[in-house]
Structure formats: structure tokens, C-alpha cells
Length: 478
Ligand code: 5AD
Ligand code: SF4
Image 1: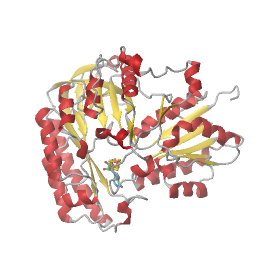
Image 2 (image 1 turned 90 degrees about the vertical axis):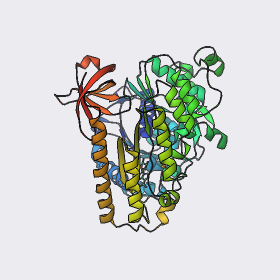
Image 3 (image 1 turned 90 degrees about the horizontal axis):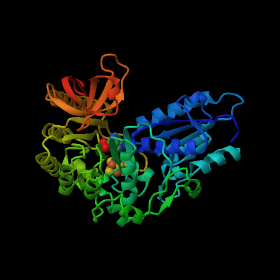
Image 4 (image 1 turned 120 degrees about the vertical axis):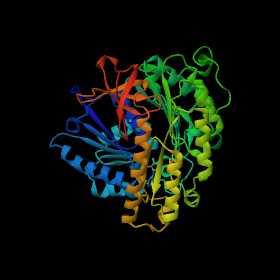
């Protein structure tokens, strides 16, 4: 690296796992000597960390990658990097190769730990570098992270997905499910708490099968860089022996997600534990019991149901029925009456009839979610559902979508109204531009609160009086 400062820019699309990956990208870039910039024109390296979940996500990303051609100003050698889930789809990579010649480097999500090596190649080889998935599905520990927030932290506990829901591209681009080692997770969690983080979200495509996946696929765990460890730039992960002498208090022996929650709950300090996403088929009684008995675990679960029709659920390969889903949330609410439940639903799956759709409406009425994300089915390459005829017309899909959104908005509005007049504990986790409500906060159940209060309370837990609400947020005073 020359004496002049080099700047790197990372643009992130999609879910929290991608946000977390981008923190690793930034961490590695800083370790390589780059300064992080939020202005793509200033960047010497511009990375687009992409999302593949739906076609409209893909279109948006490709549009913006196309625009990046303008940041390649004359006489300045810029490296443009295309990574994330879209870089795991062979057809999309072909498109980049053919029509996006300004992109210098492409690598899929499972190869992220090799960014330093790839960048070096892109700079020295004077030709475009295309990396394929090695299919090794390693777990690489100790990748440096540059966290965006000082209050909220992402903590990935597993990678990949083995559920193969028929519509979903994730198992094809993120590969086989593998769980991080418990000691590594607990050590990171403890470090976060000691570092002042107040809100820790455990991440995985299906956190409820954490630990189980190691029995199915023994993942190879390696370290990011021995050199970095030896330079003392970052603390090494303590050995199990060290941990047993202090950090890890009394850990539960059974490697299950409910036990992991209890172990993290036992770390001293005032903080909240969140997790996402949960798959209903693996959301067990033990999970809800562990939540109920762990006071630091937030009273919130995001439990995507996807469809209310047993017929469609079966076609989707979801592994539960509508009745089982409703039983599970009833049990969870029995244990934790204050539990906030949010969900995802897909409408317009190939072959979805009016009757199937009505089953979904019924489930939504019965479940009374605080919030729900409604998605129109999108055909994704490599998935089994892509082979099915898309029978529902775009107009019909749009009608079903709008109807469902209206129904859920009414439910959310009612649920939020119930908070008015109450004083609740919230974590002030953001500042807002609006003059009326200069702060943003989250309730324990994860609802957004626009808050009146002094900026000095940013980062702390405070009591807030809720004064009004709408279908997506609460408003209150600290
Ligand atoms: N089409 C529409 N929605 C999808 N999701 C996943 N795959 C698709 C698809 N092909 C939705 C699911 C999932 C959320 C993250 O995205 O509801 O829970
Ligand atoms: Fe996709 Fe299903 Fe895995 Fe979620 S559980 S990532 S919807 S395959």
C-alpha cells in the first residue's frame, strides 16, 4: 500500500446476515489499511454485498451495480467488487461477466474470509477475478469485524441452511448448515457485553437447529489469520481450558439452542438477547421454556409461517401444519403473555388457490401478529418451485397482497394502540432527524418507538410513556 490513504466503501443489501458479513468485510479492509468511506465516489475499493432472495432485490442490486460505472473516474484505478448471495448464482455471475465489465472481482458468500487474497489478485493480475464456491463450507473464526453500532450487535451462530423450502434460494447460495462452536459464541457474547453492547442478536437462517447441524456436517473451523493473531492486533479466542476457568460460568452440556440461550443469559450485565430467524418446525417447547426462564432474552420471536394452507405448506416443504403452528404460538403466549410474535408470509406460490389464500387469511386473523412481512412469490433459479407453472396472475397476486397487508395493518394498529398510556422499558438505540422525535428506541418485544427525550440518553435503557401509535410504530416520551 502506498503512503496516500486508500478508501473502501461497502454497500449492503438484504438481511441481517449480510449486514453481519459487511461488518466482516469492513473489518478486513481496515486491517488491510483502508479507511472506510460512505461515499462511493471517494472509494478506491467499492464492494456491493448483494441479496438474492427475490427477483426485485436482484433487479435493484444490478441496477445500482450498473450505476457504479460512473465512479470509475479516469486515471484512478478503482476496484469494484460484487459479492454476497447473488454472486452464488451461476447465471447472475455470467451476466456480470458479460455485461458489467467495470466489475473487477466476484466471489460468493462462503468465500468472504479470503477477501484480502482476492483483492490482492484483483489488483496485481490486471484481469477480472471470478471466484467459485469451493463448497468447503468452513467456519472461519476470528475475522476482524468493524461493527456499525456501539449498542446493537449481530452475532452469527450458524451459517447456511439445510431446510430446502421449495421456493428459497438460500440453501443453494449459502450452502450446508454448520454451527459455530459454543465457546466461540459465548466468548464473543461476553466480549460484546463487556464492550457495552446492550442488544445482541443471534443470527442464523434457522437458529433453532443450532448445534444439531454439527452432527449432520462436521464443519471445519479455522482461524482468519495466524499473522494477525501473532501481531497481537486482535485477541485470540481463548482455549476451552481458559474459558472453563472464568468466562464460561456453568455451561449447559447439551448443545441445543435453548441451552445456548440460557448460557448467554447467564453472562453478567444488563443487556438483551434477540435471535433470528426461527423455523416453526424446530421451535420446540424447550425453546419457549428457555425464553421464559431467561430474563435477558427479549420477549419477541420472528416465526415465519409462509402460508396458512396445509396443502401449500406441504408443497413448500415446510415440515409443519397450520394447526401445529398455531399450537406452538399459543403455547408460547401461555408461557409469556407479553411475547411479541412477528412473521413472514408468501402469497401467490405456484398453484395457490382462492381457498389456500383464505386459509392464510384465517391464520393471520387467528395468530394476531404484531407485525408481518408480506411477500409476493418470486421464482428463483435452482429452486424446485421454479419448475412449477406460475398459475396465479400478477393482478390476482397484487389483489391478494394488498388485501392481506390491509388486514395485517389493522391488527398491528390495534396491537399498538394497547401500548398507549403505558410506561415501558425501552433501549434508546438511534437518533432521528425529525425535530419532534429526536430519538428512536425499541421495546423489549422489538417494537419501534419514536421518542421525545434528551440525546444524552442514547444507548441506555429508559422508561418511556407511550402517547400514541400507528400500525408500524409507537410514539412516546422518555
Ligand atoms: N419469493 C418470495 N418470498 C420469499 N422469501 C424467501 N424466498 C422467497 C421467494 N422465492 C421470503 C420468506 C422468508 C423471507 C426472508 O423472504 O417469507 O421468510
Ligand atoms: Fe430459505 Fe427455508 Fe432456509 Fe429460511 S429455512 S433460509 S426460507 S430454505
